[in-house]
Image (cartoon, rainbow, N blue to C red):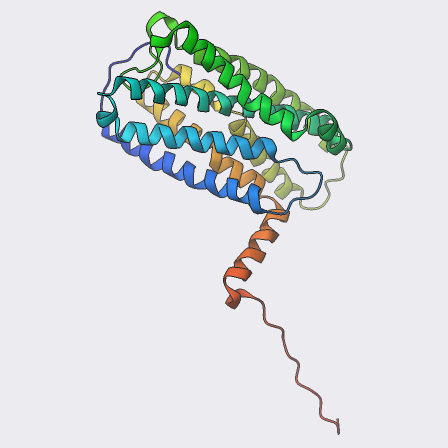
Length: 292
């Protein structure tokens, strides 16, 4: 996300934070992906965007982590470094495209709560979403390679800063972040007006806390905190940026899996199937004697 070259400094704290939090994010992204793939969902639920967002996040962060851990081995091979930087360019761009698709689906869901299932099947079917999700990133990377083939393979095996080639990544990212921020604000306004019409007599405080958490988590899922990348002029901001954006998969797992009653019930069934000892035992009442 940096628009200018910065002196390369090996800070042990940054390396440790990077290693720990990216691994944590990978673990929870994998759990979310497995949940979306194997959990039984209601017919109206469309998880295509979330599944592919998890796939893109998992691929991008895993390749990024492995590249940084073995950078000294990879760096001498210029062609390999360029290929890796191109692959990172594609995976991270596909992440942002899927964040945009998720924002659009969420916006439609809030605007048309009663018609979301038919609207998704009619307009935003799974095949169409998959084509859009990966084709846009592929076209951008293909055009970038065609115009500036030497723009890949920096010292960190990323996009080079020369000729402002970094904007082949930052341009689409800024556009998507701007649209997602507008959609997110619109979603909050629409959701707030909708909730005011509902009866919130039972557990109002608890529901409010959950809604606030889901709202903050959704902003992370849509990629809004990536804006912090433009203001990483000190180590604390860099650490904050790295922590928040490495945990997108974690927030996806919390919002769509842990906080879902449907998914929690499925987890309980899986745990009971794996560990039969956890199955609740029937309480046997003593039989009454015949003379009582």
